[in-house]
Length: 458
Image (tube, rainbow, N blue to C red; front, side, top):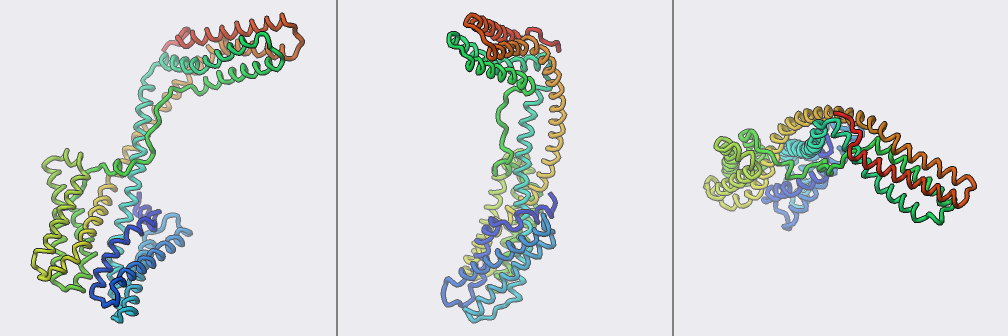
């Protein structure tokens, strides 16, 4: 998957993504409007919702227009759409603050901050989600391919005799019930076999004859249903962390970008420094935990990659929270209380986003290569097995033509003749006996074929 395919695909303006952005953007708006003298407490919430709706409308409409020209939106175009949405968010926020609270709208500052936050956060998140969806499809395809290989490999190692016997059993087991039913029907209608009954019996025998030919063309052994083509969320995430220090660096940059500008503006430089130090400490723990586990016990990291990531993120959040409330860099504790929720959400989303973007991209490349190799092996096995089955089916067709299909055809001819000519009761009885003899002979022939009589040598 290319960067353009990921960023310009269906997740570029997906409604689920827009909904996911609502909680963190609302917290950021609440933090920013802490010092705005709105007349009522709920005005920041109204501002946050209005900003989000305008941004969502711009992104959805812009992406819809772009898709009329491009099936996959170019990266520059989608970045411009996101930047426009972020800029309008700042304009809406400033306009509400000016009209309701009577303060300086600070359009330039608001627009610049939202644009930077959007360009730092949105592309990696869209890329990570696209890679995750790609991962589910690849893992599902791998599961299906491996399942099919497990069924093709034994067939490839089977001899001609094994294939021949399997085909014979499949045909005999399919036809035997129909033969028994025909014999029972004929026995039951010995005394009441009129022209309509003869015609019906002829049709049923014709169907049996056709079924015999069809089975020769399609006989296959039964198999269990394949696994789903799309892997579950948990199955797709069964991969260990990779490049933990790069992930930690990107988490620190993204979280700092999200929080530090507004913290500096509202609470001053000491609070901003406290945010930076707390974020760096959290990022170090997010990188150090999986890196340490990888050195001490690589197998544990492979087996418990998700748990390791969760533990690292929780430790980072706890460390950042402790520093924000107890470091003393910013002596006003309530500043930290207001900042901590946004900082924690930022660390969680950034950790999940960048870890997924890095890990899933690498894993998907490896999975693509493995899938191509397995598919090549599967195609070769299928070709070999088809040739083997076709050869043995041809041999079985020659064997079936005389004893089975020939007798059924003779019965059909006799019944058709009886249905179109004037015959007495004695002739009808002889016909019934003859047809029954032929059907019993067919049953015996099928039993002998299923038992391997006249089996082709391997």
